[in-house]
Image (cartoon, rainbow, N blue to C red):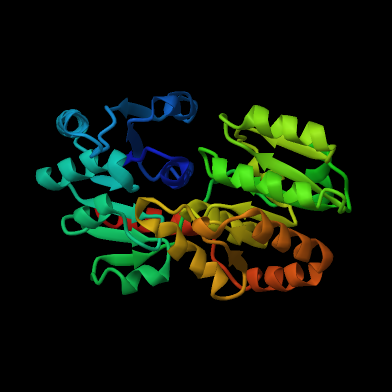
Length: 357
């Protein structure tokens, strides 16, 4: 059986696709091909012995007439390339993981009559997936709440596949690996795969207010803010480790007592898997879908949320000080996060995909 998978853009789309790929390959369930505009995936896919095809970025840009025309040409080019790929491979099933990057392949498959499925990582289904939902055979979603927003008999709740290499590590071992102290309150700050300047800025201002308290920081800054963040910690003398981006995310989550992060679908799934209380600051753009993701945890007391427009030094430092001084609040949040969750999401997605043949 041949399956073609498409994902691109941010790792919030890419990682669930790679998780499905790993499950299908591990069980020898299908021959896998991958289509993406993200050329940097080539090495990773080659190591997994997966044939990859790279297309132009089909994202539609509306900031000017010239940009729109250029992006429309790119989209048409990508669709034509996907027609060629599908006619060449003759797959049994096609799967897209949302965003403009996966649109050309899934759209081409639907026109050619090839069974197709899409997976949505967020509560609110994205524009590309919403359009494709009318044509595909199955719409696989991460959250039960999506059923209230998209009424469709095609919809199946599978959950959001997390990376197959994630594992819970003993806290002392994770702290030792990162060069941090055992027994000290540890905050993990991350802004998604691309970093988040506003979170970096407001967090540094907030901890400058409480730097004399007993805590340490793991900070994933993103590439653009790395020097700024590293120099800041050197200046105030707070124990820390700073990374632009890191594949060994299991150590970061396992070491943390509290996470400060955006609220992408993959981040929500990872927080739930590692059972770490969080301060969530949803990304305010892209249809503001992250706020709905965050509510799936905040409504049950598993996290707290600060709207991006309300994010300021006083609010953030207040939360940090309160959690450091009253860690029983985090213990209660962690207890709620420990309620039964299923993390066989990649297997569920695989089962639905294989049923399309």
